[in-house]
Length: 480
Ligand code: ADP
Ligand code: ZN
Ligand code: MG
Image (cartoon, rainbow, N blue to C red; front, side, top):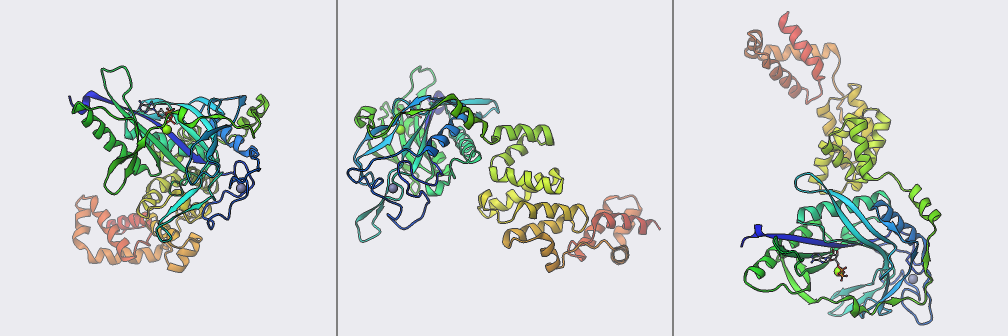
């Protein structure tokens, strides 16, 4: 049998840290990067006799996430203890949710490889606390515990095993991340671990009706590693089956350097965690009114912006997709268009030059250093004819290097467009006298020769001459 005879089945458990100001059961701050153990208190350090109190914002954020992913919101929910020992978990249990999660039975839509819409079902979204962090080998071989992250609120979003390739996983994760960013419940900074996925992979023969045995790779926080790890794991599992072996259900560790997965431990079952309701916390009851209120205050979601850009602005499906993929780009587009009233130009700048520079500099859209006003002003300067679009490209590069008003950049660099009739005429005459052959070409009917002459004039003026004026003036002068 070959790879074509197998079907890939993938389900994801995504953890997102919520961007509430304080932790889930105490009032310690959640911000990242503080000195170890400075964001702690007796509650998140699990001192005897302390009691947790649920942060209401955590419930609100989780409900927002549930509504934005088409979930049913539970009116009646609770917190459970998930028992296990690990040095970064001082209570020896994690407060999570077991059989009554806050949100259930949602879905998000992605496009499959044929461009058709595909629903990826969400089994549940529940709230839980993050664990602390172990710092290994930083101080002479030992491991030190930092509890700043202990008690930071998380939502865990569990998908059904509906994904069939690493490409679909990539689309799903990007969509989910963008939804969470739009509704402002998580900053989703993958490098800081605030958006990470446990990836469950299995394969089965197309003719089999039952799912194959899955392996799980935990806490993956880069799109690239996730794709590579999935591809590796698919090949490995098929090889095992083709050799007549059996895939073991286990937790694997992906190693980015060797590009391989390694066995970490046998997979635990739910019963190993001895879940039970946390007796220190009250049940979570939500009224219809509460839920409706959260729903009313949801901001516009990427899906709806996508539709709107296509209908209102006549954008192509693809261009609209690029812009709404990031809330930051989408806001930049809306704000700049509002100021300069030229949405076509703004979307072109975002899709072409801005995207290209982001790629080259390996920047995320939210790291764009200039404001939407700066971008709008750049468009206005082109529309007024103050600068040509080739100068505008140089101005944009400069806005990335040292962000300031484009007008200021142009003045400083002396990049103003030459639109003075007499100045243009002088340039045109000079180029004509220097290129008699091209002039003859044009006279004998070779229209293209004008393009060459304009190009020479642009070169001479370092891109500053007004190209429309050059075009017109060359024709006038030659036809005289
Ligand atoms: P846990 O991993 O915590 O024990 P579950 O048993 O609910 O939790 O499964 C977790 C994830 O594994 C879900 O996202 C689910 O879609 C996925 N999953 C379950 N069975 C398979 C399978 N055979 N192949 C791939 N993914 C699977
Ligand atoms: Zn605390
Ligand atoms: Mg799991």
